[in-house]
Length: 124
Image 1 (cartoon, rainbow, N blue to C red):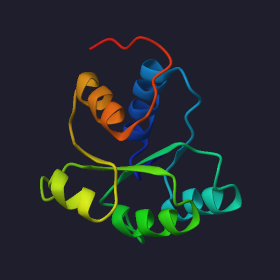
Image 2: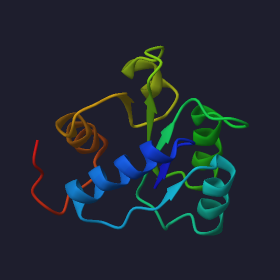
Image 3: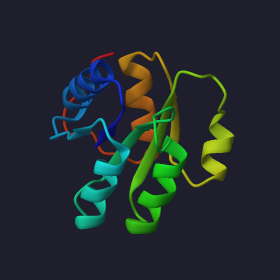
Image 4: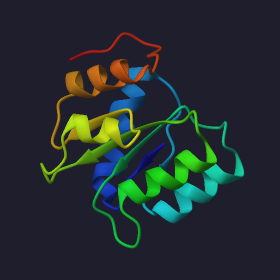
């Protein structure tokens, strides 16, 4: 699952993830809608990549709510702010940090460190 209020980012992330893993990727522009989907079926997703800066609910707030509903869910925070560091996101219980913009190889490495198994060979 990818959560970002920017439609272009959602499309790009969905394409990158499908190219890397070949798995179905659902995308949501609304954190509240994404949360509703996870609460309804906590085992449906292996991974959520969420943007930090979104209206109504930011990525950290969404992550806390997701973790409460699906404790085993892997969550990666994506941000273009440069404010966060890997150490911080790990200390708050997330599985990784993506600083935007990022190349495909960075996404692949973050997914690997988070324990996400990729199904197809990835290209850098």
